[in-house]
Image (cartoon, rainbow, N blue to C red; front, side):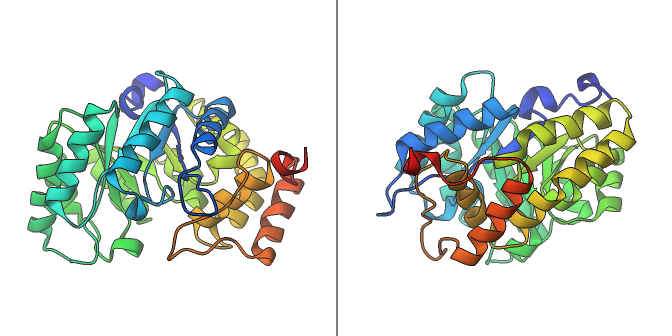
Length: 309
């Protein structure tokens, strides 16, 4: 499969990384760190960055901070990198306001998570999502992650939303591959894997790309995995997947991805601090040890050169 087979790649990219938002120990934005992470991701091979998603600690970012993060990421990543910005909340009017603000600030696309906590009906989910999609001219990627929201997008809802001219893709963290394949076949909606442990089967099933947390330190391997699948080289794809599995385990099964991503970036010297905002807690010494061991086994330098140089 080529890029022509995946038209969504021209809109969203194929090798996306869920970018953490670097912060200082006092909780303020680490502006130098934000630029450094964005540059690191592009240099590592990603062609799209998700700004202010779950891994970006979106629930704790004020709108003025989100706009500043977007400005800094754009400056560091350049115009060729697609910036997909998280705007979804469980407050429709607030989500619409945020969508309009990031569109004016230069976002390429919107990421809209299913409304959490409130548990609206599926009709309510559709109305909420359409209101956000109607607020700008930007393409929309839905974010289906019932483990966090408590509410899945049903197959019928996905089909209904696919009729909207700007709702073009789904970041799927539900893990129902048969539903993924069915919705793609019925609607032409593009899918992006949002579960790093399942990157290989999603791509093999026809997903357009990845939105990866592991990609903060393995975007080059994700790029190679996508290339191998596009070429129909399943043995090489399996080998790449096997090689990156220890990193995936360390980042996805040790602590929340926000926490592990920042700890990993600190370990390889991209950022000076792994601070997170409450209610999250920074990685413990034992969690850092797991991440450090996986990075070392992967051949990546550890020890935070920013602090030891």
